[in-house]
Amino acid sequence: MATAEYQIEVIRSRRARRISLRITRQGEVRLTIPWWSSKRSALAWAQERHEWILSALERVQKRQQLLPPPRTEAEVEALRNKAREILPRVLDECAERTGLRYNRLTIRKTHSRWGSCTREGNISLSLYLAALPKELIEFVCIHELCHTVHPNHSAEFHALVDHHTEGREKELQRRLKNYLPR
Image 1 (cartoon, rainbow, N blue to C red):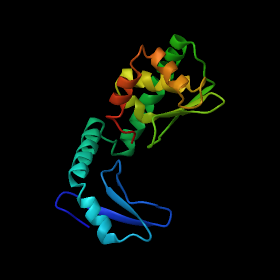
Image 2 (image 1 turned 90 degrees about the horizontal axis):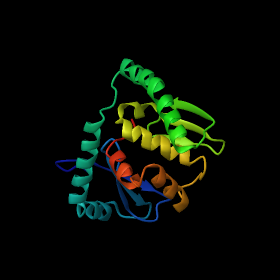
Image 3 (image 1 turned 30 degrees about the vertical axis):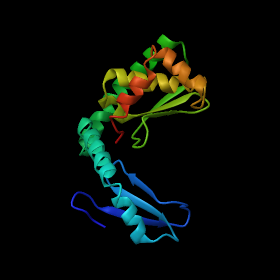
Image 4 (image 1 turned 180 degrees about the horizontal axis):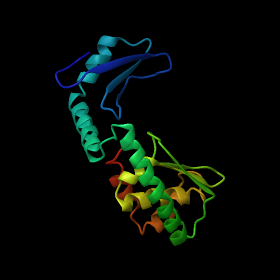
């Protein structure tokens, strides 16, 4: 179904138990409905949420403008080289400042997350981090280093991140949400 501003992709799912509406990182509007649900009533339900859809699409568009994706392989390679230069240094500085240790660092072209940490203490960072302000790069590095102590998102984990970010974890997390890994 299409409206003047956006198109709704309807996905019928056997696993869905309820109607859900989602805006993808690419700005697509997806309406997932249970297999037994009426498409007409689901679309009417989505139309009732027209204002929410418009505001969500606007947020996605703002995020895309903050960090435009590299368009060519040359741009991606240039960003990869910048990441190889910057990220190991920033991670080492953060590890030294916090006293937290990690095993190994890998830099990957991840599109869904800024970083991850294994139970063995191996940290993986997205090459797209290199395009962010240094303060946010440091925040992601500290976040992943804290996973070497708490491999979860428990209250203790967040307290440790907050401690190492001088009480600014929520503020930095909010700022980081303005950007999308590509």
